[in-house]
Length: 128
Image (cartoon, rainbow, N blue to C red; front, side, top):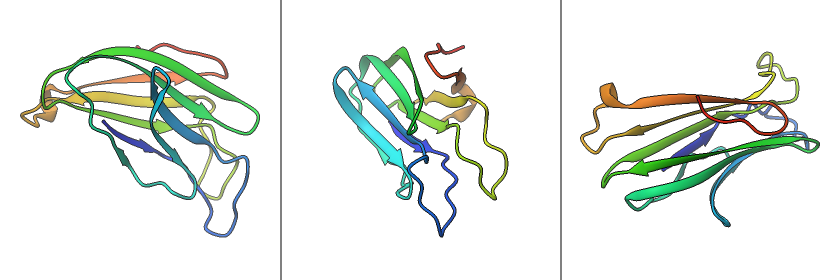
């Protein structure tokens, strides 16, 4: 799994209001991306069925959704989140958390990759 969070952080200020995004499988946290360490996370996932929970968390709110997916040998799950964020010079924040995810097959053909969008309010949502 390759995971990334789109978190806009001004270079001169840190805030406890900045969001963090995480992916869990059961009770195991597979990865977390938060400000100022916005390095994409790479986590190997075995082939088979996975029930993953995607979280976006802030100081006063958060959201999560769960998706069950099947990975074949060599498939790569790509998960990118653009969470609700405090106002910044980088522009308007989304009004809900957005997760973009898809599976790139072993042959690397992105033409066959299906990407889904989950828009989450303050509680829970499911993928479309």
